[in-house]
Length: 451
Ligand code: PLP
Image 1 (cartoon, rainbow, N blue to C red):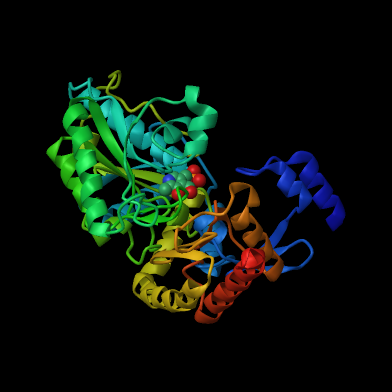
Image 2 (cartoon, rainbow, N blue to C red; image 1 turned 90 degrees about the vertical axis):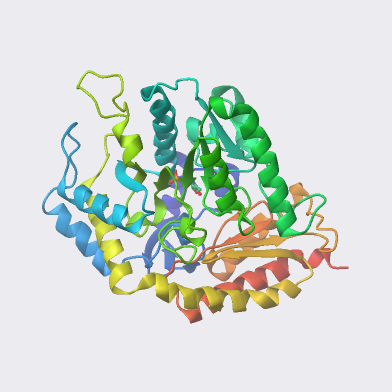
């Protein structure tokens, strides 16, 4: 089919996620293939994949080893979900995941996206308390600006304003504590002070409501879609301590941060946090197939263990739970981490990125650069001194990423924060090229605001 026809049909039939289709129709992009850190559209134009195809690609596209593992599994079986039956790749993967994750986690429940792994975590925590005779513990507490996915349960424990404005009456109510957002704090700028104040406010809420709270959901160390905001040192550990003190399950969302993104296999390792429930997805298959998992403790698992007709059974499961192809891809993915000592190698990339981003700080409209490992957010503001944002209608972040696309790199904005989250496999030259494109696009987009 010719290219124009494909574009016409994409506008005629598709409805894309999180996309105002009017924007898409004005400037459609149809990807045909990928190789390494490059994506190619149907016209043959190449783009650097500056946000790892929505934060999940690890080893680049068309990695031979993962492709081979998928093909090999395909020759055995693509998929079977039989209630009450398991399959070989899902068993082997579960063992690997438990091996890699924090000590307390002993059980794996599969699903197929980050949002579903969070839905499972919420239902699991809720039912756990019922199963052990504490049914009054039904509420959840979360942090301002949290993003845990887009399904109804996930947006209910999320606190991204847009979801609450649009889907309010579909959602259940969650308590909310302030996030220690150092750059945007209205009256403090000392990170330790902000951390302590936020922990204090969290404790006040927990003191009052702990007997009703089932769990606290937290993105691991950094809020992604809520603005790429990093917790100050010690805050995460402080949250864990409070959850223990007030007998609340700590549900950590590692969907975006897991599998080496932050320079550790899981971001919880930075502060030695031990979740009761942990959700993983995205990088689990290296970004090849939709697998997610909710990991939990033996104590929680045992609270569901009972006779066949028991109401203690966990009533959850999707058609593609534990999909063999996905699990085989994940196993091949994790094998590469081990063989190539990938987490170790990532440290060097992290320093390269840090050095490459440094000069951008001098730009008159770069308000803040936030980096946690291979996760970076570059926030653009109209005035650096006062941190005053650009007018919302100006869509400066959006126009910057459009310019980047023209220059050969794809990424997304979050408001006026440019997301930079390259595949872990990107080499120095590719990282340099990406930062150079980003820098040029920022310059071109913001120059009309000069002076
Ligand atoms: N949790 C976090 C922290 C995320 O960043 C995301 C997606 O970006 C999700 C959950 C949802 O994952 P998915 O898009 O796979 O449903």
